[in-house]
Image (cartoon, rainbow, N blue to C red; front, side, top):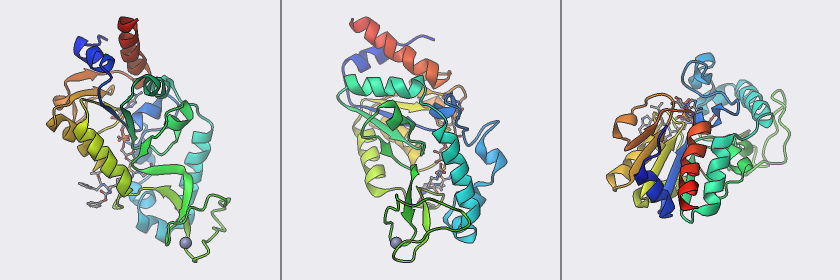
Length: 245
Ligand code: BV8
Ligand code: ZN
């Protein structure tokens, strides 16, 4: 795997850089992705688990699914893909991590001000008034309710739900303003997150994709690393650090 001179030059110039991540960056930590051969959506139907109506129809089932994923995520560690992005954040002054993931692994790897487009599985909130309900233990058979009477739900964005306004607006602004955009470990199928790489490209950014498989974005990328992010990200950053030393 070669890193182009253009990419190393851009990173060494400390230009405005956005990294959009998806479930693929957490795959090497042992967190299942959604699509692809062993994806979550092969075992579970998102319409039954990741929509507001599914939750109101069967909150116990949806909570059991999220508790299963919380338990799984609590047992894994960030991988070199996450750690490399955290290290890049310490050296680059304009690096913005925008994630579709809800697994908190970027933060656990040391990245700060991560933009969470789809929420965070470790947080709860009230379905009615959105109050954070952090202090509650979740028993699917006896779900706590908010003071306002609302049900407690995971603080994640389900299909058909708007993304947190500040998060998507900031992400769109940073994508439009950046000189370098990485799309790492995402199938680039879920909107409006999947619009971000094209917003960057249309505004003149150099577009890099890191994904072992081709996606709808691949034909538009200026540079493609068809490899796991846990290998490609350290290699890219090493090429930059090596040259500048
Ligand atoms: C919304 C919940 C307003 C959290 C998820 C056009 C415009 C706007 C909306 C839409 C539109 N068209 C359709 C829509 C509706 C919908 C949508 O986009 N549907 C898609 C499927 C067509 N969007 C929405 O509903 C969004 N809301 O827009 O509201 C609205 C509403 C209705 C109509 C119009 C407007 C809300 C989207 C968020 C949904 N929430 N999950 C949770 O429980 O996790 S979706 C789910 O997919 C996750 O959030 C995930 O982050 C997201 C994207 O998946 P990826 O992260 O890309 O993961 P995936 O498995 O797909 O791919 C993994 C990739 O990694 C693969 O390519 C693989 O090759 C690669 N990989 C594997 N191993 C590695 C690797 N890469 C690197 N290294 C490795 N080792
Ligand atoms: Zn409430």
